[in-house]
Length: 420
Image 1 (cartoon, helix red, strand yellow):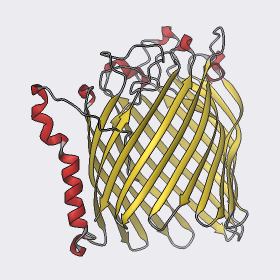
Image 2 (image 1 turned 120 degrees about the vertical axis):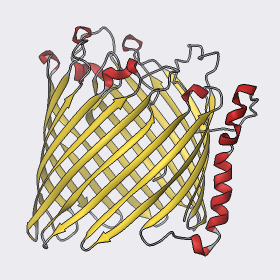
Image 3 (image 1 turned 90 degrees about the vertical axis):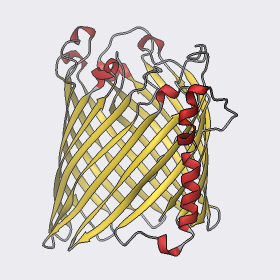
Image 4 (image 1 turned 45 degrees about the vertical axis):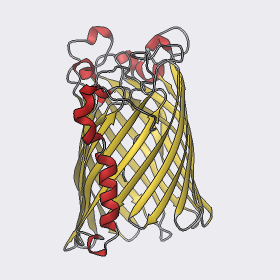
């Protein structure tokens, strides 16, 4: 799925120093025109049966780019900015006997009109092999790479800071009985930051899973899952005096259920008991209920709803806090207004409790609450050409004592994509 940033297109006056970049900044529109022309010719409708190239562009406006406190002055006297993005890449899908190799490669370039020191090149790669052995063994093995700008919600700086995520995984299941399956898997995720000031957030997380599932004939699933997660921070060994732990381990015992009540309603549950143990500060260890429930409901053929509630541990990109216990809820709706027009809406609320996960003893409420609302419209000019318009509003009530201040932000974006 293609990614797009928020945007706006106010009048911009360029100084002589930027003239060298003008041609590049007009590249998104040029590519889109080229893509539309190419897509109009059936000879370019598909590169072949395996590889499908695509291009995309977006223009975004954000009135509080750095998520600054409402009372804080903007950097260089500026809080808002307009960004422009161009993407190019390809999708691939290649059967190899009974195996299936899928993935994508995507390159992007993002420009900011005012804070042009944030301009960056993004990269996204993904490859997945769906494997099958005999009639009862199957699974996936793959890897992905993603390079993007670090969000400003917890880290506020005008310095460009790129976050790179490496992910490798392998999993498999053995259906030893028509109604029973045993499965296992391993996943490794590595987060690295190119800014030395944020090097403390570099981390590696290794997760091992083992599960047993009962598979009734209704396409539902009732299972039990054991999971062990180990996280390590390689650059925190020299700053433990600041109260930052160098690693943690987390053990989980959870029910893993997907229940298909009907074609209209399905429920997915992954929840149970979790124990989180810190490597250095045992006083911060915690345990208890943990999980997520998601409901899919499609009462009408053209309207679909997705609702979720969760109570989960999560990592935090902060110099003072390493993790939080998050309580949240969201509801999303999709309406196929016509054969070519789709409307998407989302409401989301999440409270992060930092004291519960980190064991800090601080005065007052050590938590923050974020509320997000978004609305988007997608117009399919042709099956392979899309135009989109999206608007969002984001606000947070923070805890200044741990540097998660309050803010409000809103923005709008326009995007277009073409696949050949």
